[in-house]
Amino acid sequence: MMRSSSVLRVYCALLTILGVSWVASLPQRLGVSLVTAEVIGAMLGLAVAGAFIRHPYGKNAGALELALGAAGLGSWLWMAVHYSDWLLTMSDRSWDKWVAGVIAIVLMLEGLRKTCGLAITVLSWLLIAYGLLGHYMPGSFQAERTAFDRLTLYLYADSNGIPGLVLSLIISLVLAFVLLGKIMEVTGATGFFTDLSMALLGHRRGGPAKVAVAASSIFATVSGSTVGNIMSTGIVTIPLMKRAGFKAHQAAAIEAVASNGGQIAPPVMGATAFLIAEFLQVGYLDVVVAALVPATVYYFVLFHQVGAIASRDGIRSVPKAELPVLKEVLAKGWVFFAPLAVLVYLLFWKSYNPGLSALGAATLLVVLHTALTRKAPSRAQWLDMAAGTGENLLPLMLIGGAAGIIIGVLNFTGLGFTLSLALSDLGQGYGLFAMLVVTAMLSILLGMGMPTAAVYVVLSIVLAPALVEMAIAPMAAHLFIFYFGLLSMLTPPVAVASYVAASLAQADMWKTSVVAVQLAAVAYALPFLWVMNPALLLDGSWSDIALVVTTVLVGGWVLASTALAHGAGWKLGYVVVALGAGSATLWLSSWWALVPSVVAVAVKVRTAG
Image (cartoon, rainbow, N blue to C red; front, top):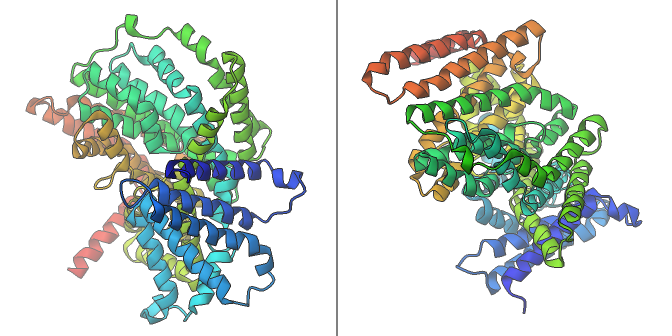
């Protein structure tokens, strides 16, 4: 009998192979006719099976985990095999359909709990409960009575349920970028970008921290995982920062904030740029243009904060003798620029499918790396890449299934419209600012612990429609919830990114989280700014864009400069206050529209009191 670890590798490798075959249209080329839901069923079954082995109940996976995984795989394969026939007999809810559906959904949600935690799992179960018991709810939240077998089959085997849009996007778009990120990691791209950043920035004050910011931003935009990026670049950058003189919790916080920022950085944005384009039905270039200025401001402020901390604490640069030589770094690693250049070329100039573009870039990287090293990847290395990619896909597939439950129940019961109406009433009663604050808090709460693409998918379904109902531009609304969903990675008490970085730095998790929130402070403000002034998303006249970009950059610089004075003694207290007030004043060009809403909230609260 195969060991559980070997079974997991097989499941994960098959997950990658099936996904790549689908993106490359291999079944069609071979004359095999498949519906997307059939491929989703097979891949989701593999993800469920892999989740039970990857996260066993005890120390090691045993017979129980293997049996539950096999049951999960079998129940989803049952749907995949019979899906085409069921399309013609959907009204026939025979026991062999809905019993398999119950097993499949229950095991998928248990795999989700073990992989991604309680937050998204509890939300999924609550929505299923609402679908079955919503007719007992009072007032506008009351739903129609629904038969158990009908809801089960709707979620299990309907394109509006689990095997629907979200998982379709994950297997056709996101998977290829996860593969590209894995191949870059395996071939040494992480080390190259770190060495390149060291050669360019290491000689400056606080150089190792600026290296962490630069290297993490470059790699994270492709990797699609804040935690994965921390584990890849943080093992190099965090020790460098500590050795230069940064405190352990400062080094961890800088790495966490830099890695999280890569998910908002064009052109890839952790593959979420393509999801936003699909959901809004706009061009991919439109998303990149809209995200450009906020991401630039984010890193601009972070760079200056790092420099201010280094100056305040007397942290020196790395001696040039200890730095890598730029020419030597480029000579060894130029190959890593080629696939990124090809990716951008295929996306922007040729307008190719994003998934195929990423596959093309990944293929080119393997070919070039093989040519330069004069050694083709062995069978074991190919398996490692396939299994590693599949393992990174496990949480995405499971959260995609949960998102299918959320979409299905919201549409099936009309709860989505009811929630949008409730948030809209909040906005009309207490003003737009109050609605944005509540939406931001819900985004942080719902985004806890989820991978980047999954954060966006869930929040775009649950919260974005209400913002659009309040006449907020769709792009501004979707980027608003995306930013705050990502900030859940840094915001206590969960703060997964801060926790992972703190563990690498052997630092206190709470201190790391507090510093991370301070370093990312600009990200908590930017979404409010662009909702009130879309020119920040390059949507407006050139004069409006120039004004808001200038004021935000200058305001961000002043805000970052307060780190230089903070903690330097009570005599500088007045300087801190002056800088903070000046920063707030500079940002008022975008915040002025909030004043009526804030006043409305104050009046409402006072009246209620």
